[in-house]
Image (cartoon, rainbow, N blue to C red; front, side):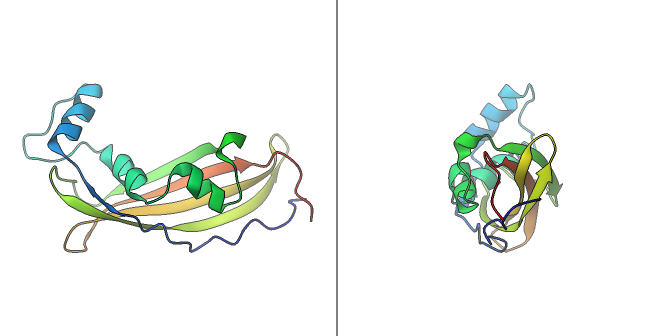
Length: 148
């Protein structure tokens, strides 16, 4: 029994704002990860996650609220796929676009009723070309059995 259907949020836009990778931010990320900034101006690859999450226009809590889930109920990141189409560049501004791909209700012997959330976020260069695509998957355990 998987309970009632989850909220119908597939297709919900996560188009956000623009995000610029500054030299200072890139330097700090490189220092914290034990690397040095690339001499050719390429940004550290972790900005694929930083830029998409910060620029999506919603906090993680707001994203989960769309799914009728309270962030205090213990969401779990189940995975993230990153497609670096081309290197991100320090000083470039990217448009953050995305959407909720799916929200599916499942039953687990260990966790009980849960929803599986998948959302995609992309960085686009000023000319509109795709630079990065991330696909994020979350497990949202429901505190109580959801009625059918």
